[in-house]
Length: 205
Image 1 (cartoon, rainbow, N blue to C red):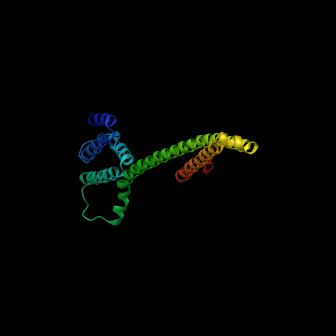
Image 2 (image 1 turned 135 degrees about the vertical axis):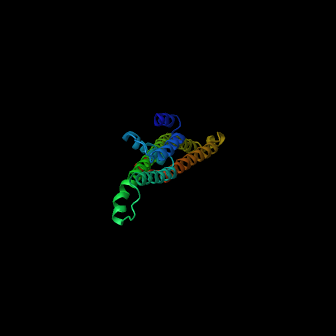
Image 3 (image 1 turned 90 degrees about the horizontal axis):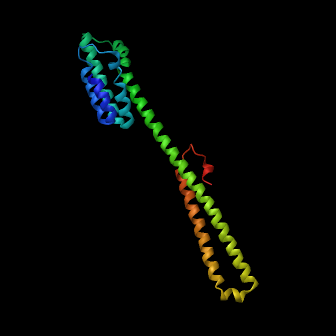
């Protein structure tokens, strides 16, 4: 019943609930009471969750679990007068490896989550750059057509072009065109510096 309540607390408070569950398990596990197998393996949940959220919490809990398991073995079987190196090596993996495996699973899940976030951000940047590139092409095409039209009018009737301030209009259009090129160049540079290996570099076109 106690562990069932703690599991419900873990649902409501994932971090604090798993810390309390891990501490409770480490205290109760070595006691000379019969525990079902489900309680024995229940420690895997806080080990995985805490390692996923904060690696140092998972490592500390794994050390506490190892001490708890060793204490249980000593209380149940007593401490031999003389421990051989072979006996220690044979018992150590069964005592340490389960906890380390759970910590490793938590770290793997954390790495997978972070990689997914990075790939999602890279896709978002590539999509934004693609939209900016399309706007750039449309804007530069219009400005280039405007500049060519002004040049044609000025070459056909120079006097009329000066009276209509066409040189000034051309200068404004040329400046807008240059600024548009500068903006897209900056966006491309940012995309290249943040592109994830999982996203094709060609996306930053």
